[in-house]
Length: 319
Image 1 (tube, rainbow, N blue to C red):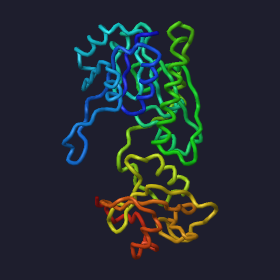
Image 2: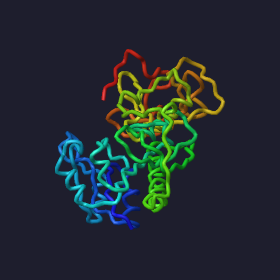
Image 3: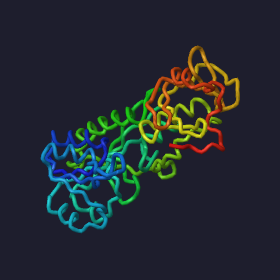
Image 4: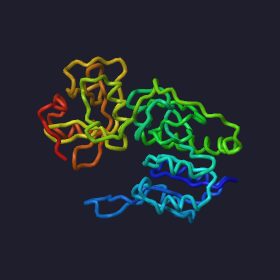
């Protein structure tokens, strides 16, 4: 049983932490500070990892910047951990911190590195219509997901996977991999292999603008975008100057688009939108300030929806 310091922040890290608690001695947890949330951002929301750690009575450290917080760095030394394990912590560690544990730092990254280095690898894999992704355990270094590979496993991306559903499956895969790999790593039985930087791609942080639908793209590409940005920030277009979120949709099998991209049409008792290649069937939509609803029901209650052109370039989104 090893002494472990765990560093993580969002829900992706929770299964890894829970597995470490069951199999090793977790001596401390480091996570990001509580963040403003809710209407008016007047309340503070604790990271998912902090909530899980407190449930187990573990010491929790929340530095604003681990690179600058000397007190936290001293505390990390005092814990006497054998190894640090990181899963979506959200800060790059400087070499001084990486050198603290005698067996180094193992990072859990939700992609098949060197593909999709960065903050949003799960969304990036879906956005690019990949058929598989996976989890990489790496020996964390001072770069952005550039460490040598310790272990790697692939996972098939289902046709209806969203970032939310795929995150859960990858998190549990990562948790199992950490438990399976740590004994051999601590015993010095694993020789990590360098990443091939020539094959590296990036997965930068997501903004709301990234989720705006360009109807000139193919139905398949738009379907991937919608699933990649579910639940956040939510793929959207515009209708009469208002933001219209596309909650669920699917490419129509074999149907060609009869009208220009963005045009709403009826398709076999369903509602579709013409794209640059094929039709996209809308299953669920949400107008700004309203509840999500069935797209066919929305069309029945919104005169002129069928025949409208979504995402008109001169119509700014409101709401």
